Length: 231
Image (cartoon, rainbow, N blue to C red):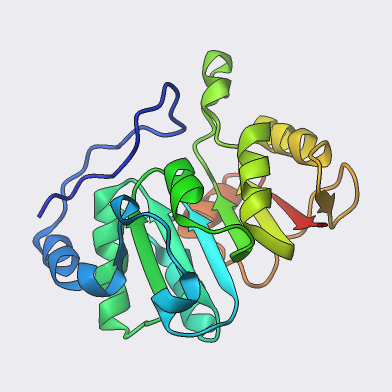
């Protein structure tokens, strides 16, 4: 079975596919669980209600890493359906392995590029909340253009969110937080729920990751930004 991220050819990517081998457990879980948890970019547009066999809230997370916090949210909100997108194969293998072990049924995953999946797989107004937690900051100035949070991406998210839907971002890079704030405050169709120019406190539904806890011990800041679609 081919375990590589799916993507379409584009000139600029917001990620680099990181090296890393799957453990035997991750590979077996991938091969065994893909039919249950896996979604393919190549299959094109999906109906999220059909995918989960029910109506109800739908949450999309971009870049879930190894999946710890996404799994916690799925377990804590069984009435909500979660879809994650990740380009790191070991993370996809791990989240499927754990979901299977914990019998979590309200979760699906893509191993693909997020922009491609948003453009090609999700219908307009099909998502209640889009989560983007700790995306690659591309901290060198010459690489800032690779950051996923750009005006074009924001308007793509707007198209896919339901009326009143939420775009929730978090980063531990202050410069990126400032760029996110400037971009979203200026974006058509969004309202900063904390007020113009303000960051939001971490909501209870977003678990604090091990990475984040370590950063706090080292004195690093974390900025949450929560915006509501207004149309």
